[in-house]
Length: 376
Ligand SMILES: [Zn+2]
Image (cartoon, rainbow, N blue to C red; front, top):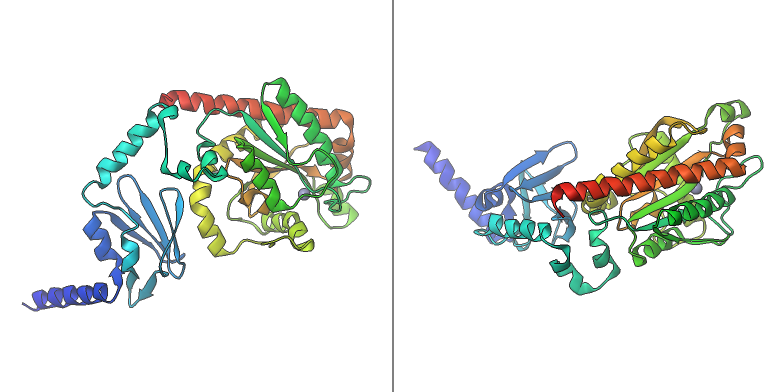
């Protein structure tokens, strides 16, 4: 009897909260037939159906759902062990109730049919963003090369060379190599000019690129002894950094934006920004890693070796806006005499360009094979 009373009370309380414009998330999940998962450390939670996952965070008025960031009327709250979201927001997920699985199946069937017949609703916007929605899942044709820095921004300085000159020289050679392979190649700059970080990704999106490669040289500020020791290449993807070293490299590469007063300039991404990015990153993550794998394979055996595993992730502003698989490639340490000399030499630049071109060619083949297995 007592138990029934409690259940009744609970139901009343739930009804009352819905009345008040708030919905209890677990009750909502039950009503939609989706499972609820709570991650206490990050204070995030997910609602998972057979086909979709919606991700939320306490205190953030955004959710990620179906590869998009959804703006919420208000941030989810946590009170006395219960999570609530605004009732107005419930309609944005897992609707309509009865055809959740069938409509998702329709979407799945559509995407496996001819790409020509595909007209995703986003295309109505006729924006660059909509065009790029298919980057990563279609054949690889357009490569955007982004030589870092330029103009008033010299990038890192070696004993003899400037980062902006090395990356431009390598980029030009890479363009030639890729064109030989039949790729359509675009460069964010082909001379010594200054281009804002945010503008680089915009250009790549306008060109509807399939892959974005930003070229840089690494550097450390240390004693000559230490500079002699630290060398090697590193390939970075946009991902929450796991080490202080990776964070520091992103800060150094992002500094130019704050230095020259770029709009929305910052050296580090906030947790909210990471969260907002998550849905989009998810979309291109697999391909960014596929390309990174090919980079490691092609670069191994070269004069410049991997530095500390060769792969890392951090919040590089130049990669943030790119609606396509994207990596930032630190060719070597300009602060290291050996790496610097090699990156300055004609033979070195040519070898680096050939290796990166090989990586792109192999990546194109990997994407093609993947599409074949999916019957596209
Ligand atoms: Zn740089």
